[in-house]
Image (cartoon, rainbow, N blue to C red; front, side, top):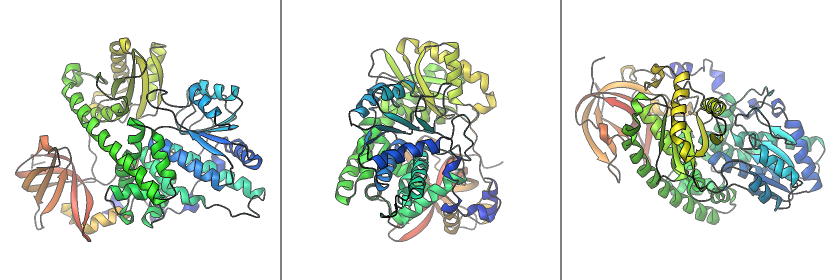
Length: 551
């Protein structure tokens, strides 16, 4: 069973399951890494100030923390950081953020998880007398910023073997190159050489939270970071967040990074100030870490409430835009918070299986900010670029990846943009791609594998995530009982029966509307391990179910 699951994901030899750090691709493969590391080494040797310009999501926050901790460990004297306010500045290195960075007195500005599209911001920083080093992983536009050095695996001419590095991963690679250059220059002759591997818990978190594909290189980084957390060597901030979430460090996996830690860091950037998350990651003592983690946990609770309310409104309003007849869906609500529209867009995409954009009013009068999510087979940024070519200036700003993007436009242009988006989506998508498809690894119960031991075996074969999807199975089972659970009664807890086996617990999160109370059901599910009071038991997480029993 395990061999079949892994082979379906391109792993056909046992050696591919071994993920030693020694197998990481070398930094030398990144274009611009030599010039970039020279800039940083010069700043360290001259003891000139370095300021990091970050981003307001988890990848950006972990990237800032890795840069700050790593540079200080490598001997940098004055290291500061600035991050944009989501509501007033928007994404990336803007001229306004460049000015704020200049006020720190630093002579080298180092971006993390942004900058490849910051033409104006880089120019402003250089006019203010700073050297600029861009580290990013987003797709570049037609024009690159006039930076002193650029490190981005996706920039033109870069042949690096892992195009899927997250922003924090790019920063980690820069630190490796800086350390190597300092080592050659004899910098560590009379001082201890830092162990940059101590930063891998943060690298793993940012990589998983940013939903980049877990290619082999990223799996090595994530696996090493998870192992560090399990051994009790995580940053105090991560340990505090796990404690508040009731999670055992020794049992952390990629899912915990993506669904427990990531959202709590992201919540600060969505609703408050990402600096709270960064300071939590930088905290050196447990007391301060716990205080900041508690703040993040409270902000995340508010985020959940806003998200639930906004999602309900979005799903109720789908009929108004005749979503079933469209290839691309755009929705705007005057009450939506700018910080949660990305989550609303994700929910719309999941519900309609169509590329979706959710808009909220921005701080600029008459302007909307939108967050977009795509479906497999459609490159979202390319579609936005097509629209921009057809209607130059309609989008005030846009950028992103194949599956996620952001944009801003004038409210008066929303109806016209919605039509253009639908048309552009129709041009690149076939109607069959709008059908929801769940790819499974087939039946598990028939192979006798529906046991706790199977869940433990699969968990050990991870990390699972984007590009390395967690195993999903489908079987027909008998529903013995069902009841709604949760504070809002949106979830369902099932007791399932199977031939020749004991009852199994299954959870259907958000499944109250499709709840079945008896009979035979066809289920698609993943395996999870419920640990309670020292005992472990098997639970199923339902991704789909229906009452049809014959196939």
